[in-house]
Image (tube, rainbow, N blue to C red; front, side, top):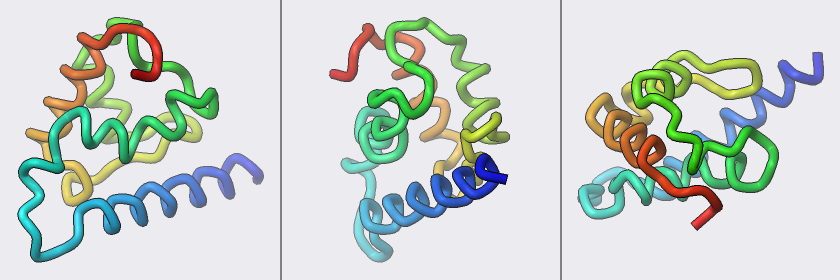
Length: 103
């Protein structure tokens, strides 16, 4: 029960952060870099111990994309309208090649 509530709250917060970070009617190209998406969407959970550490683990890009698109346990699934396929591929490559730590 609590996991379901947490999952709903986490997804709501993440979607709200996307709306604030990427407002309609503005060019989002510079802001939607892989590192920018990571900072807005992933960093809060994955660099603070809420979710597993992602950086520095050399997780396969295809695995990262699968989990981000389909969700896993408390990790919400992100629709293509939230993070498109090109952005997701770039984000996965960024995470796969990242060094450890939150920077």
